[in-house]
Length: 458
Image (cartoon, rainbow, N blue to C red):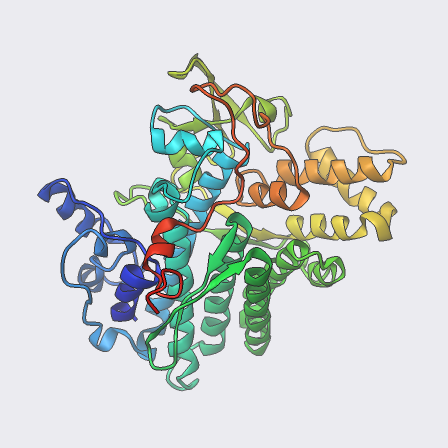
């Protein structure tokens, strides 16, 4: 897996080599990945420490790292730990970047490559979202690396037998679910997408540019595969099965298939939650909670904007720091994630209930009202009484932004519902100029320049 993953970092993910400013920085980048394969023995982690997305792109040679016996079905659980770590880090990075673009966070720094997302003036040439690591709120490279890692693991395990791989059905289902969620987040946050994969021979099959709808259809199919595999795993696959049900319901909601979304959501049991894990003290930031890393404790890169502070909702706690940013903005840090080790919901019964409510807005307004009122009570809001269709829809959107705050959802909602974010485009931006209108992230230039199907070289 790792030899091919090195190729994915260099070729598929399409990030050009970055300049290394000093030998110290290069050495640091080689050592930051001790947690790539969480849970592995210390000796094996040391062997794999160089196998990361950004590190391989920061050095001149080699372009491949011999995988030897590591890429085998015998190491399936170890490789799954790595795929999980890849996804959880990518998920956190995307949640922060999507929060900056999608009005959940406001920027407090003078970092030029960060405030363009809050300002919504980013372009396809910008490096933060395209080539940065998940620790730096990168999106494209981390999510593509997560997708490739899970896809390649699935290929390896699918070619083995149950006798070769303990818990094979669960590993297959879990790798499919992580791949599907990576596809889903890319589809929700980007204007267009490329999915390159490895073929049966382990060679890169270059992907062509797709619309968001086309990419979402692929994500739906991958979730369906995960559901089938989780069902085959029986009781051991129950958690992954519910994860996949919520993920497919979310995907179908994006595709406008309300009936299909509801059919999945009603299968999710009360109290179900699937979390992205984090841990404190990781110098690479791969395992630390990214929301807290940007807005929590002594971290004041971003905070809660006025539109969310005004909600006065315990689900969106805003901690007043009694001081202003360099731009004169009052600093309010998010309080939802309280430490580097805070976990983040990937999928939950609560999300499934809100999906059911959305599907029922027209078909069963009474049930939709009941569900929405349940969540309004969490925010100390009065219940809706005989709401109009427009009021009910507005209330549903409002509950989604409160209940799912900083959980990777709201940017996709803004795009899907065609909502004007606050502050609106054309409003004066605190850092100078005006707010822009960009919401979905464009396909990065590095992808277009290096993919032979896009640059005309193939």
